[in-house]
Length: 318
Image 1: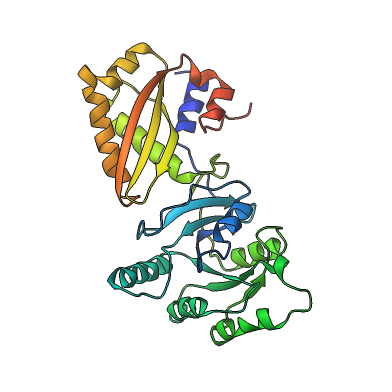
Image 2 (image 1 turned 45 degrees about the vertical axis):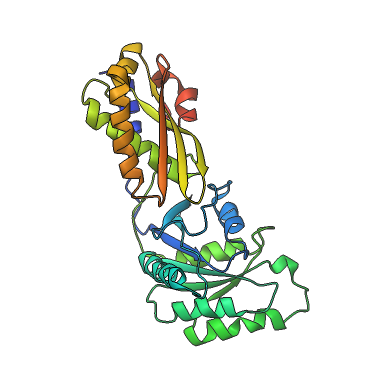
């Protein structure tokens, strides 16, 4: 094996470096009523457009939404199930799921619409957070829509923050105003920790990265040494509906012989890979999953720096 091949194969494992001493990291749950600007906020913090919005009552698990890596910290922003006052049994289950999600993150960022006075929905979420041991930050979004002399609206949220001694930060997810202060406050509330993901992971949808890795894992498990590291997986398209998520993925290999191995007799191997990968994806995504795989032959793609970058792999600089 050449040195170049060894470097590239190491890249395929997405080796995560050791964080420097004192480095901080953690998972941040962004919660709040609908339409308070949570998605816009995540887009701004991560610096790029984030994943497709999830269907409303989709999953009880935290879903990875964006990774922000700075010299001081790595912040992984996760989505929590929608929180609303329950009106039926399903609503009670969703609230319980949200409480579980809140406990599983390192910091809770409770986002409210700072351009309007506090409402009952905000108060309900605050009550859920009263007894949590997880640090909570109250974020007043949409300050760009607030009149300069308006004090009553921001003051109405003191009822939420003061009894719990929650720090409060004002910002605008649209203009970016105040986000530096928010980011600083988030880092202050994180504990020292490792890089959970490669610092330079290139993706605006980490879920797709995980899906691709689950498929690639099954390829390596099922084909053993026949199709070694000369395989990459890209998620070409994801279509999300409330009842089903359709995933279309391409498997990239270098030779026709490898394509034949992956497809198998009458498509048997590709079907086996798809079934196994779909079962793993099911642990991440609620509802049915439809997975369609196809194989592409790209000779010497591992030697092409531009192609490696397109496939999401970082090439070591010489």
